[in-house]
Image 1 (cartoon, helix red, strand yellow):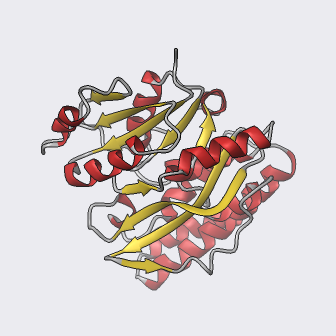
Image 2 (cartoon, rainbow, N blue to C red):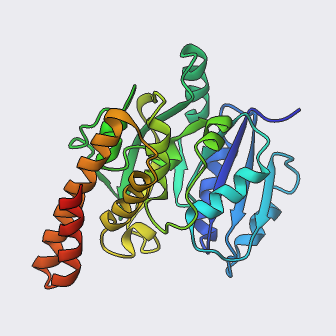
Length: 276
């Protein structure tokens, strides 16, 4: 019998962090799942994770040639997935023991909801980061807030596999903001469920995260949003909102370029802002 949930864990050269992440999945109170570790061509000991779970039929290890794009790696896991629902866990994050159980209970109590996410607990260099300033709408039709920033953490999500495939999955050519792009496509037509409880721990500050590689990620959100707008993915009020947000992001980015002496780049984004 196929599992109810397929858990996808992408990894690249993070053996020690991966061991901890996988252990929080295997220790879940809800047990009807498979876990698929997709190794993006690691050169450390990552492949030895198989030895820890070789007797557990729920554990699957898949190694691919190094690609470097998180969306590509996650999508490779989805291709192997047999579950009705998908959950994603970044290899440096951790789940609380009852994460899946609470999400499954939520879905049973809220028929029609095809995605449910949760609050996150952020840890940086061993210290918890306050989330008090994160005042965004998290449940219902959240498209307007999802435009501003990525308000759904990939490691928090439980999503119907059919919905994931209907919206095209993760974009595979974006190094950053591939999750932002996917949640825009999902929330364009679908309500989001939300559990206002930190059921995952995000560990930041260990120096290996793509979000810290470039110092800022807004340029990647602009690219993702620009391509969706140009492709006319949205219609009606959502298209208008998307154009307005694209203009706002471009204007802010242009100002930052001018401040740093990158005048030609700033002029390009100011022109983009005026266009929309």
